[in-house]
Amino acid sequence: MLATKVIMKNVRGSFVNILKPRASQLSGQEKYSMTVLLPKECTETKALIDVAIEAALQEASAKKWGGVRPPQPKLPIFDGDGVQNSGEPWGEECKGHWIIRTSSTSKPGFITTQGTPATQEHAYSGAYYGVSVNFYGYEANGNRGISCGLNNVLFIKDGEKIGGAAKPETDFADLLKEMAGQ
Image 1 (cartoon, rainbow, N blue to C red):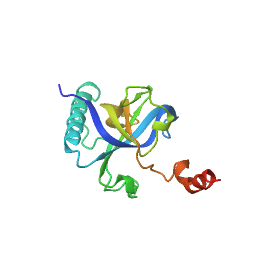
Image 2: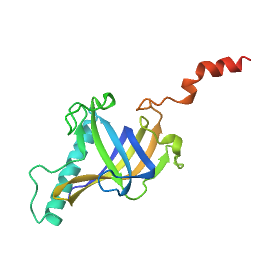
Image 3: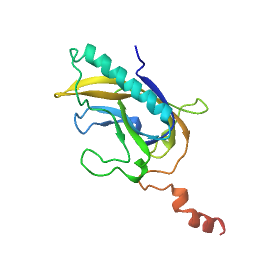
């Protein structure tokens, strides 16, 4: 049997909701989630993801879908250089990346590189993470596909924030220098 678990190293997070669940727009169910931006040059990790998705498809076909594999299953991975289902292009931060949507109804483990619990200051769009995920099949509302479960997250390092929100130290750098001189 092929493995459905993948550990991604040094990826960027976007729409990071790993400390507090958020209600899904479709179901209303509260979930923890993170969109993972995997650089396209990480070909080994992408190959592991492809194998895990294939394993999840095989398992779901045998155990959930009565031996029938959908010809176009919905998948949680997208090409950041392409367009969204709406036809709109992905954001600039997605260029050159694979976009992987992850979620879980259980709170993921979240630690720093020192092995200590990570905090709110570590959970933001643009930071770099290690992310453990598991791919699995689903069937809901007539749709069959593969989802990506969020297991655990490792905060690796700070990165440029995605979404335009600057750090207060940056916004007020000149003012802080001016005040320090008084």
